[in-house]
Length: 220
Image 1 (cartoon, rainbow, N blue to C red):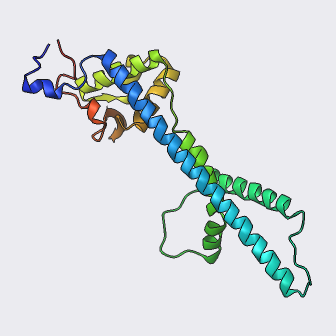
Image 2 (cartoon, rainbow, N blue to C red):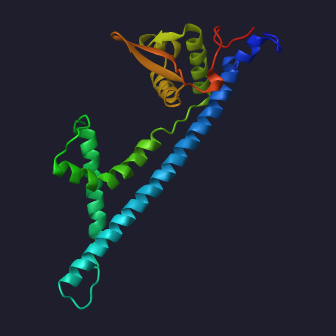
Image 3 (cartoon, helix red, strand yellow):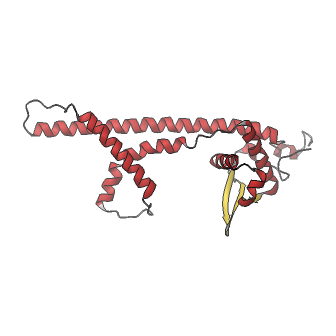
């Protein structure tokens, strides 16, 4: 064990995979808390935008009815159902566009129809981003946390590992996918392409608790 008063001891933030697993659990809880906070903010924003659109549509209808010379302007009883139906259709259309249409590089000039489409689909896209945000919510079981911790220590020791060699570290395919995606979302590991191969490394901006020494954070 490195003496507590040794300068090198200050660089040993994590000593064993077991302590790494506990630290990782705490960071995962904070990560999920941030995801929940962003999701709540997105939900409130989407609700506010839909209410604003509904109020604007009602105002335009009343304006049109008043301009038509009607003595008493009123919102049709079926308007709310039509508005909900249009909202569902526009959200489905925004999802289809995002799912199947190729996203072009941003251009300086756009066709007027493209501008109108972006304006009309802005609220549905904000609504869809709520579901995208929730996909960042991650959960690892205790055994999965232990495997993730061991993998982090392995990376700290080797500095980089070919992606094709990861199954040797985490044999189960489902666990491997969960661990890699979770560590990526938490910015603990990074995937880099070197030539034709993908390399797994520790993220340069990973949390301070995962800053290892040259020996990978293990101490004897």
